[in-house]
Length: 130
Length: 130
DNA sequence: CCAATATCCTTGATTCACTCAAGCAATAAG
DNA sequence: CTTATTGCTTGAGTGAATCAAGGATATTGG
Image 1 (tube, rainbow over the protein chains, first blue to last red):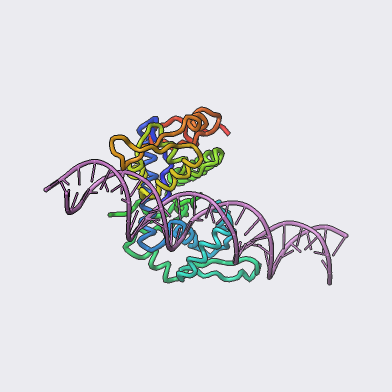
Image 2: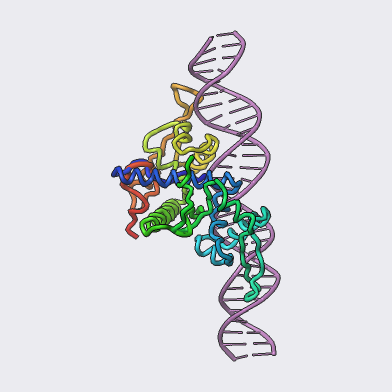
């Protein structure tokens, strides 16, 4: 996992708690992804595929280069977790879809579900019971 | 930078704000480090060298393998930002010290100071005026 | 309609973070 | 003194991320 970027010292208790929270969350996220044999980046992408969408949209939302998405999606596709079909409206573009099997294993198991929903999701890694 | 691990949807406004905060902080941290031509990991290590310490202590605090620290410190040393001297008390161990020049450029400039203090530090990237 | 341009994505090259397995050197334990 | 154990380094390998090019399709403006 990435090294934590928090400060060495904090000026308030609240600040310290906040940094700890982020740290714990990140590690839980990573652990949850690892249980599914996914890297955090893979889980992040996969989690944003609740609905079918294009790669450009993902790249913009995640603030990274399109080629980075290409590469991550390629691995997910190789794992059979995602399909990449040409967009009939624009044949340059590709539409990504989470495969049903993956959907099941990510959302329907006893696992912490690292599916990285960006907002308002009830299955955060932090919800782990372990 | 690492892809953000936040959820796609949040269950409350507060949660959304919190994830955004983390995202903004991380990007600011990275940007601040980049201004000093440092990677986030390098800034993280450098920031924890306010006092001289060993590599093992760093590895444990940062929750990563010692060899990872070795590698990061090697780059910092190559940049002349850190010195690695044998510990007279235990000649297996190495003591890391931030070089004075670096100390100045990291803590005494107009820059956001990515020096990744882990707790209670008044020079967070988030304090940027830009 | 066609040329120029812009868009979407892929490829290739690079760099770095990170992990694991081995190993060396020095200290600690028996 | 022998046998761990500890502290760090090295080497191999994976993956994330960025940049520079390029191919294919769309779009725009003659």
